[in-house]
Amino acid sequence: YVLAAMPFHAFFGVILMTSPAIIAEDFYRYLDLPWADLQAQQYLGGGVAWAGGEVPLMIVIVALAIQWSRQDTREARRKDRHLDAGRDEEFDAYNQMLQRLTDRDAARPGLRPGPGVQESPRP
Image (tube, rainbow, N blue to C red):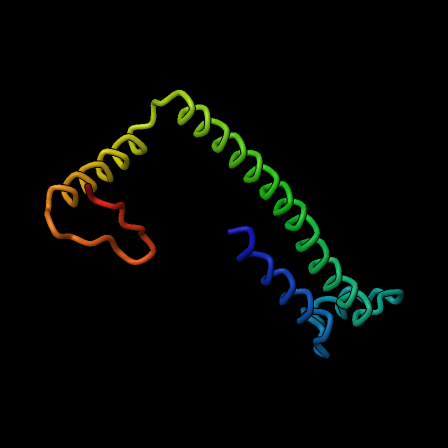
C-alpha cells in the first residue's frame, strides 16, 4: 500500500507545479494580498506536496524493508534450529516419501536408473 501511494503524491505535486491555471484563483484575488505571487505560491505548494509525500514514504519503505529483513533472518534461524533438533514434520514427511519411492523402485525388477544416475553392479 505504501508503494502504491507514492505516485499519487508525485503526480499531484507535478500537476500543481506545471499547471498554468491557479487553483482557487478567484478566492485568492478576493483576499487582495498584494505580496502574494499566486503562481510562485502554487509552484512552491506543488513542491511541498511532492517532497512532503515522497520523503516520508521513502523513510517508511526503508524501515519496512529493514524490519522485513530482520524478520526473515529470525525466521531462518528458527527454522534452522528446528531442523537441527530433528523436529520438522515436513522434512521428515519428505524423507519418508523419498524412501517409499526408493523402496518401490527397488522392488521392481528390470528398472534402469534415470539419466545421470550410475547403475551399481549386480552380484
